[in-house]
Length: 343
Image (tube, rainbow, N blue to C red; front, side):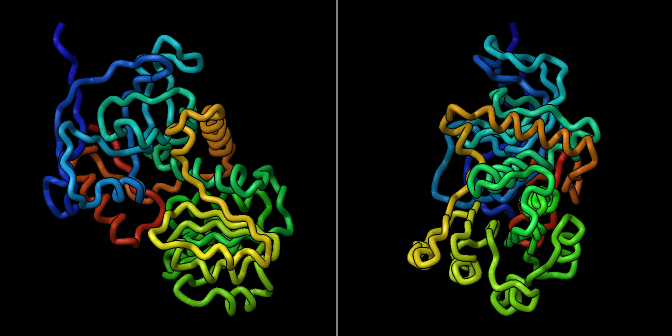
């Protein structure tokens, strides 16, 4: 029997995105599902900063093709023998794992425990914008900071979101506003400020200027919680300054410099990291929590309570368009999410 092939976009060398060999169009063997894996026919993907970080230039050469990509929406075409929740023909969306091959391929294997049903109200492209950012925002707010995301549950609680117009910020502001927070978002350009306000921010700070005077000008002495989505080390001292006593800070952005945790000691402030890949990477006992979150997100989308954050749509999914998307992300000036669809 001939081996089934599929199109994919990947790399062997880690090169600047301007290099035509930084991402390549290739043909590889189509995988087969085992265990609790689903084989998904990919209809759309989106790009995230983590894609560019993985692809960034480094002195390493892969012996086999490395396929990038995490966010995806598509159709289940085959299931592993241990699957319980999905069947061929189901429309799904998910964010994948950072220890498996990525979604920039015609077919992709993913553990069903981190897969949700695609929102019926969205196209595949619109749905592909949501999984990684929704999981990150939801886990940060509920699992790491300990807040409920039930409607109105946090009335009277102030939340500062640093980087409110980016991919995670665009969904975090929507979820936080629905949950009753007073949302203070940061943005520095007129178009990003407007985007953040449209997606749920009550107030806007300019993150290129000192936080304290801006917080006080809005009538706040401090903020109850902070979700840092940009440059943790750059904003660390200012976060420590404006966080309320016994407040909580969560960041999704790793840092190469040591953070001075002593700055939080006097206020008994809680600090937590959030990495959406922790559950699938370590196969945690609560791994299926990501399926539950994505299904809740789908319900909220279908009820019209939150919306897709897709701002740009490219087609088809190929190396040329993915290089364009990576370059835009690396510019640091994107709003919302860039999505690609079709092979």
